Image (tube, rainbow, N blue to C red; front, side):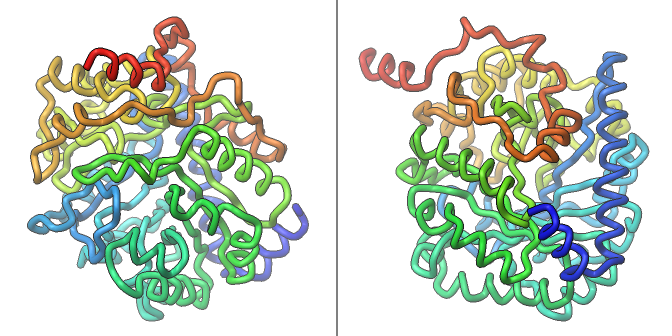
Length: 419
């Protein structure tokens, strides 16, 4: 498997792009994590990776979307995005995730990539705007990897994404990106309607055959104004996805990303560990993309380093969440987010203005934290990488008390009995 992986990277990619990814995402990325660890030891904080939702607009209307895609367009202007990235670079950061809406609807997106040739960008996209012309420009930049979302078969994709013909347009975007030798990834929000179609060897083999170099299976989270909770996976299905990810890493020549487990299979949340935070389309600094609450902004007068280091809201989010669950707080303990928002008078960062009511309406359910059912990594490379670069950085060791953990299923039963 390792030889097959090496062969794929050697013969199926642009060597210049591969070298840039190794240097900026690999070497410099590890350096940024090292600096993060040193800051934590000094009692300081700045996340080593940042995610920026550069625009709220999108051409699709996906089930479970938390972004106000139909609202009046708002975006992080090029000047503000550049200032944010430069300040993060000064703290040692070299990797930025770019989200939307649909990022390629931002007219200055490619200019942003060209303005910062010394860092690496991962763009979360539906692929509909990736033409040969766009892909060629991305190849010239050399510092961008498109992560293109596929949500199921043709019929399922149309239903999940609110438009007809979605899958064909997405596949055309993947083909254009591969044709231009980009490092291409495919991600899936795994839910009830697509788990059987996409969480299997046949789909992964097809991705490899197409020239896709990495994939990401993340769990559907029922959030937003129309959360569609019927699509959420059961505990058994979540374990099935985790086992599939671990097995695929050990058997297939394709990189498989996950963001919710360490090397031993212990659950974690990247926002709680301080690994990453998120900037929304209005510039609000949020714990993560699905938690749309904030007290600070990139547009504030003080330096970004000072904002992150001194934010009592973000610090309390990390500590409060780490003390109560190793899973996803918005799925398991939405009440904690309501409590946090009230304590800090946090603002709703959406255009719709209904986040608190949405949180109060969430029915608690299990997320990635399933104590006793941990599935450790089989692949020694992933095991080493996670042990060094993707773990809890001591966050749970400091705060987590298992006696405070409340089983989501039990909380639902208690809520029903109270009614």
